[in-house]
Image 1 (tube, rainbow, N blue to C red):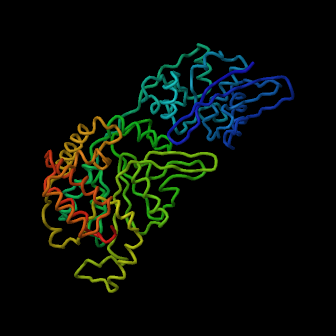
Image 2: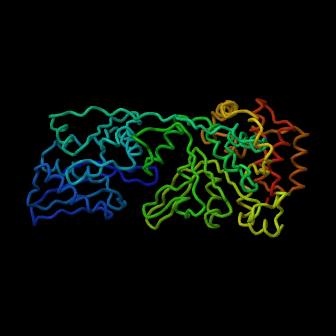
Image 3: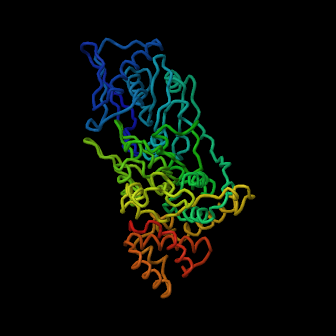
Length: 504
């Protein structure tokens, strides 16, 4: 007889259903797995055989064949152990065949039959729910998968637990979702002395999900400002939390099965490779830009990153997704992130410091910031010069609003955008608006349009820069709770665009 079980194979955040077929037939004793398995899947036969032996289940002296269908789909990972073991147990008539027909299973087996947690339980539960099946998984993966509605998740500590469940000896109960992680940050904007313009730019960027670049001398507070960005961002919506958690599930970053409402904040080192930033590697894993989906990607020492890495960011910034091309597959990951970059004005860092003038100006700056191409620089909505802070200012009491006050204004602006784009599901913030949608939300009066055309002609704004100024002006008007963009909103948006305008 041929027994059937079901599992999934991952293609990015998409989980494709795989049917595990097991046939026990007369012939020379053998245990083979076919259907494009990788090394980890092929080794499952030894783990399954030993796990069954630890349960006092001996395999018959027959030919055992496991087929992973569809056979032309590559199968990777150790999560195929559990479905292979269940299909074999069904073929041996130890558990009912129809019992596993309505389930999707995944999990790695230890040699003693213990189930080891695996990555991807959340996308697997999504696939199971779409096909109206239950999900079987290791106990540690259960709280993560249980967040998906419409799918009963049964989590066990060992293969023996599932055998007892299907035989009716000890029925498993449905797993409960993990805890929601909503812990905030203790970094407050009031800790930053001075830098009022930079704080204002940070608020605008947070309100409209605009890309932001800080350029300033070492120690001026660029990294300190960026580190306080999570404290003013609104929490993830339920839809965004599920999207982000699916990527983090594939990367194994969900702690104790809990889903976080905090927006991701990723800060890779400038020595990171292109595969680490964009995604890739042997199994085409998500990179930092996808792990920052719906959150922030902070790239300190921006010009020090590899030129290849920097140029690869250009398309994901525009499209909100990245395609990792391989010879046998094309893997797509979402990456709608907010890019915050920090850079020194030149290699020595003191080009704009009157007290410590750069000895190689302006060549030093041209060589250093010249590593950032014009098309990439053009994708930053706001560019801010962060001047050095005077020592006398460091002794002053905290100034400006705290993070909670700024976060309230940002949340109010995001609420306006959510209502505005209710009929446009692909547009969530002002930074996503384009085409007719942008024309509708950023209509200008004659005075404002004349100012924008004059600035575009004088400073050589590109068409992309022109539209990004409109988006920033729309966000500034939202922060002021004003329906129409006025000349002051547009003028402020232009003031954040003029730094390094020669790159436009």
